[in-house]
Length: 302
Image 1 (cartoon, one colour):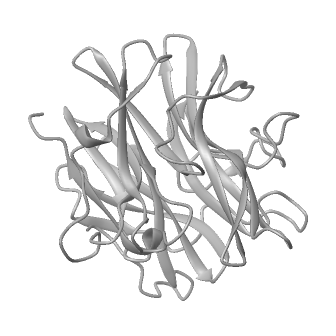
Image 2 (image 1 turned 120 degrees about the vertical axis):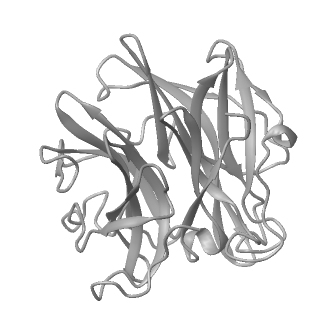
């Protein structure tokens, strides 16, 4: 475990959720969502030593992007999902949240950019770049992007519906693929790329990298009930492909399981994988969807 919040600056009061990593020359800048109060998420970052990610060098003291205006898609939550350097800027894709009445929330994907190396951000558009479509109507978030040649590939979690469980609505979602020429306008194929292990199985937060002739996709999956640190809480899933189109799901080969005790003993969730000076590192959350903070694992036999 690297970092957990404990009331820093009187607004980081719970959660260090969805670690999203920008690899810089000397540090890793890890963006994460934290909660000043329940049901309200804002994004900030820490810098850690690039050679030893357990060593925290700097904790930023304010949100990098303010919440949207009342009625906007991101009026009550901003969660980072993917970050990259592009056109001499830092681009941050993020999940915007707003509360609902019958269901708990609605969330879609926005884009913000930074001109100061990733310290402060401005929205590219007031609205989301991944919004409701005639065929995708519930949510589109948790995006991860791989750029190859002139093509941008995005994998993201697409909401498939809401199921009432113990008098409460729970969302389930599947991973889909989209592509773009500029990172802004996306062609969404509306096709589930991985088989579900059970009905209403949510799969979330994909992360993709290439190694040894294959593309490797990590994600997290859970059950539709008893998933808040319970028996069906998030676990790490895995799939592989040779062409980015056809994926073979093989969770048993993923290699990362929950610990016997401690911060990630009940849950492992929200992977984000980066290549750091030849090492493949996965940053992820543990128990309580990030209530216990985030940590990292290193791929064996790098």
